Length: 117
Image (cartoon, rainbow, N blue to C red; front, side, top):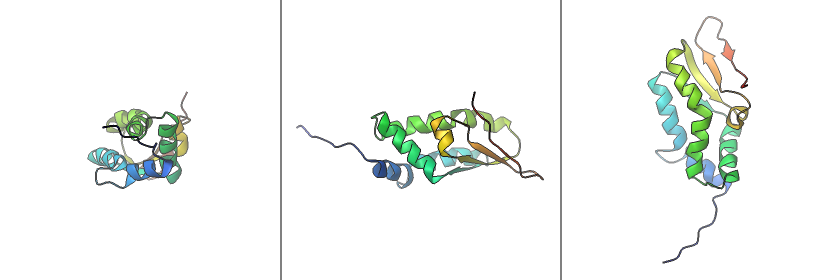
């Protein structure tokens, strides 16, 4: 049996990221919940993840790779960082231009966005 498949478009990849019961974004949000941290993705970040997967021609398989690359350092740092209550992923974080925003629960309610070197 031979079957031909068409490439998934950006809209389909965005749906895969968000909609299924076990969607990748929901999985990562659950991982952060274990550390009592809320993980938030801005809409442009979700679209950038889909675009990178399309650019790599890896389809849905590539979505996990892009998410892993975007969040790996943050996932490693969160357990040893005090007072982080929320992580916000934007397009710059997905593209590797910066790290995700860290929102702290403190009197000053400061937000930190570190530039990558």
